[in-house]
Length: 266
Image (tube, rainbow, N blue to C red; front, top):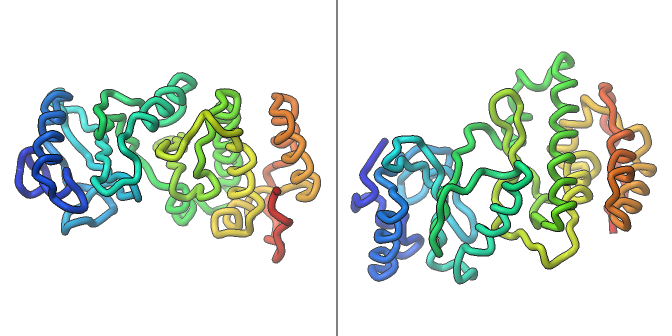
C-alpha cells in the first residue's frame, strides 16, 4: 500500500514510538528536503498495524519512493533511542560503502538515512528455504560463507567493527543470484578492535546455533580445533595470509553435525 509521506496514517511511524509533534514537524521538513514523496507499507514486520521493512532498538525502516520513483529504504531514528542522532551510523556505513559493503547511502539528515533497498531474505530465512538446502546447492552455500567472510575481512582491513555479527541472522541478507549484503551499521565503530571475521566465523561455523547447524550439513570444517587456533592467530595479526588459512579449512562436503561445538573464541 502506497501512501503520501504526509499522511496521518504514518505519522506515528515518523515519530515512533510516541508521537511528538515537534519531532514530527522537524522530521517532515527533513523528509521534504531529501525528496521523499511516498511511503510504501510493505515488509515482513508489523508495527502500529502497518507493514514495514524492519524495526530495531534505535530505528525503524520503511520502503519509500522519492520523487525519482525508485524504491529506496528509509531508516528513521526512534525518538526513544539512546543515540542522540544517526550520524555515526551514516559515517561508518559510508566507509563500508567505499569497499562495496552495505546498502549504499543516498542521503541523510540527523535522524533519517535514505539508502539503497536490498531485496532479498535474511540468511536464516534463506537457509529455511528447502530449495536452497539440497546436496546440489552445497557449492552455493560454500560460496555464501566465503563471501560473508571476505566482506568481513574487508571491514577488518578498514578497522571498522560492525559490532553485531555474532547475531548474524539479523545482519546478513541474501539477494538475487545469492549476493551477500551486510546491513545495519548502527552499532559499528572505528574506535574498537575489529572482530568481524572472528565473530562471523563463530556464528556461521562453530556456534552450534541454528544457522551453523544448517550450514555444516553441506560444508566440512577439516579440523575445528585447528580452525579455532587459526582464528586466534588471525585475531593477533589480521594478515591476508592468516585469513586465507582460515578459508582453506572450510571445504564443500556434506557431513553429519557434531553434537558438541568447540569452545568459543576468547
